[in-house]
Image 1 (spheres, rainbow, N blue to C red):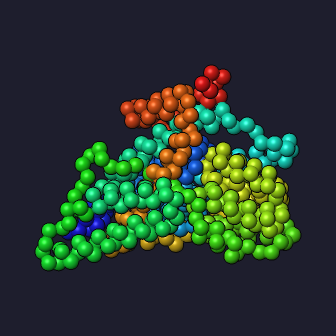
Image 2 (image 1 turned 90 degrees about the vertical axis):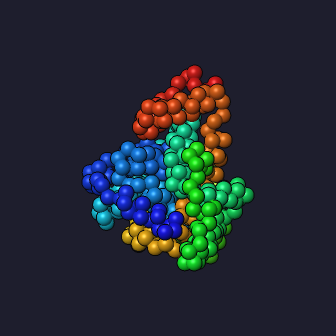
Image 3 (image 1 turned 60 degrees about the horizontal axis):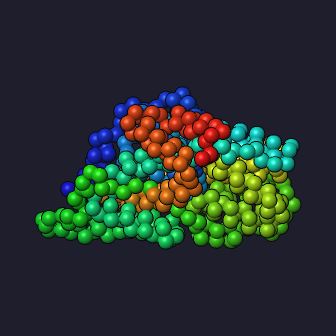
Length: 415
């Protein structure tokens, strides 16, 4: 039996168990949408802590398959993860409940910030809160990466693919190239392994030998996608007067074609809303992106802020629905096919490679986040203390985030 077949059978053997109710999904993702700072990598780490480690709704392998699938479709990855989990646990209704409950808190918070911005002409100050939250988030992400790496990089082959993908990420290789390249490498290894099995020869040691405990690699989300930016340029319309319909069409397009990080979203907004349509000033755009970064929940809540500036509450709702709607569609289409893909040896090999590539992208993002988060003695202490509380005492990551926010606001914190 090949390594791919073994992993597929293991996933099937472990699958099942308790499925979440709609109430449990709503409660979990509403809470995460309210306190999940730090961007997609941090959000996914908190989801892994809740649905894999604590509640055991998913196996690590199924969770990783969802992460890999999210990286292969456009849209906000952490929101799509929430939607995937909801769909797996409670079908189409669960898909809607989990996705909406993750999005709504960020939308409401961003709407409040946008109201204050329009009313008073400046953004509220979140510096102290973020100062304490960021190092906590690093600890949360690292412990999730360590656990996920034991599945995503569980063999010598997958470890090598992960390492190559990490190197490519640090070299700013396009994230889609990394993901599809990782999948192609594992498919190539499958075709080398399969004929050897047919001839009764031993399986390649590099492909099938598990890695000893303690040598797995950790995860990150990569740089700007040239493909997405090209799609924005190709689809951009000529300058047009503002309307709610035009606003909805623009954000629907963004949600349908955007791959990559917040920097890619910035490129879309700059090209169309500032340079072509002249709906926003440069300063307003930078403030909108900053709001998406400093508020909890999906970074795409930037659309809510922009919509409110341009069209009040109606504009905020139109922009929010437009940018998130494609995520529900893509997950509804791709989600049901994941179990079938995993049962196919060839498709399973590709998924294993994509999962390794996804792990690598998260490693790169985590490194970038840590450089901005760990800046002095206080943040080092917060990160180390959080890691101890997570690993030794298994404290819920949500409480850690709240404690970090409180610590960051103390007058003696910034030393």
